[in-house]
Image 1 (tube, rainbow, N blue to C red):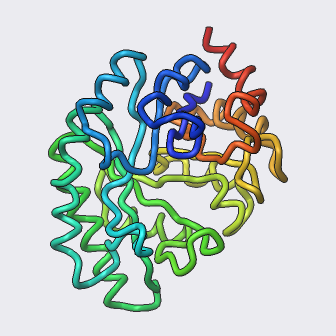
Image 2 (cartoon, rainbow, N blue to C red):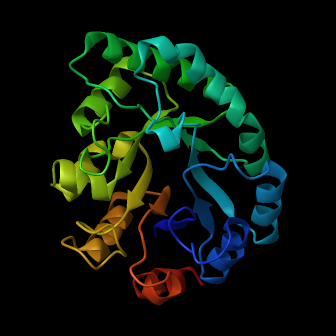
Image 3 (cartoon, one colour):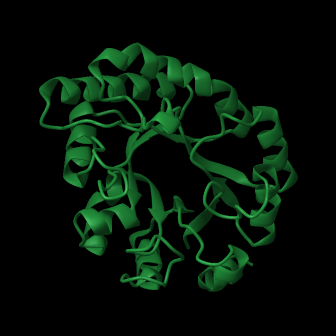
Length: 260
């Protein structure tokens, strides 16, 4: 069955960040993810993971100045050194959490720009090679431009082509169901097609990015399809609860109960 990971950036936001680990465990989650850990001491996060017997499924490498609008910078020809420094910046949190996969955000740019396309490929290859030394997978994720205007990597086929071209065993696709439906639809067939290169899946309803089962997709069918496909990775719950996290966990109860 799917291994669901609570996204602590979006879920349980009624309470402070470090308290969300315990709340996620109490709700029945065995794993967590979040966007960025860098404002919290790595030892404090490690303690919460250990205390509640949670697995760290995923987080993102440093994205640059988020408040100023940066959404990564891997596609920037002048930022290669900064990309590599970002891996070193993340190392204390990598070691403390035991995370097995990291997402490298592409940044704002255009895939029609040859210099940016070359810079992105160079950065992804170099980061994948660096992380491979520690047995860590690198993920790249297509993101829709409605939510993130101007995002460089906004196409699943382009992501798959880059993964094939770079040919790194630890370079994988982060398949976000929400972004896929907005960008191209045909979610089930895309899951079947891309399964061999998928390293992580994320979910949210479409179009409002709320709890599964509240939008235009049959999320229960998709979860069952992941079982049929033999997917054994994590499914990150990257959604914004409509009216409090616990109040919206009815969708999760059947899957939580199956684990017991």
